[in-house]
Amino acid sequence: MQFGRRGVPSPALSQSSLRRWTGPVRQKCADFVGPELSVVDVKRKKGESFESFLRRFGRRLQQSGNQLEARKIRFYKEKPNKNKMRESALRRKLMGEKREYLLRIGQVVDEPRKPRRR
Image (cartoon, rainbow, N blue to C red; front, side, top):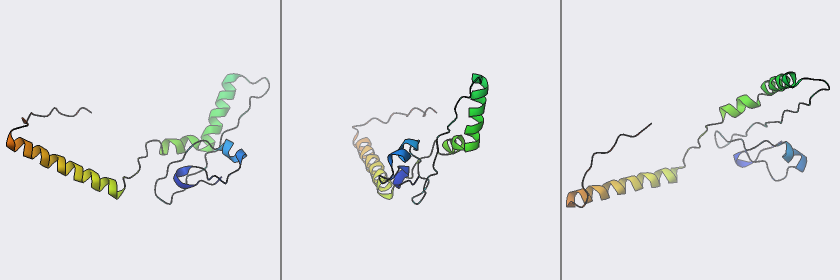
């Protein structure tokens, strides 16, 4: 299966390949193409206990590597683009200057700030 931009399957894919698609794979950089996470297909054998079926499923899931890949990309955070960073810096600077001005003219009383909770 081929992934388009941002890990979303390209629209040219067939319906059968879309059914196998398990979800978006996030990009780690601009040219990164995410791995295909295939669905683990395990059917219960005749007369097999649920415990042994579950154990076999877990083993197959580990062998596929899907769980490991999902854990790797779980908390990925995209880098902010330059424009957003620049706008954020300008906003912080303007707010700081405005606060400083209001402190100087006495319209804002400087109160000690509470420490941030973690």
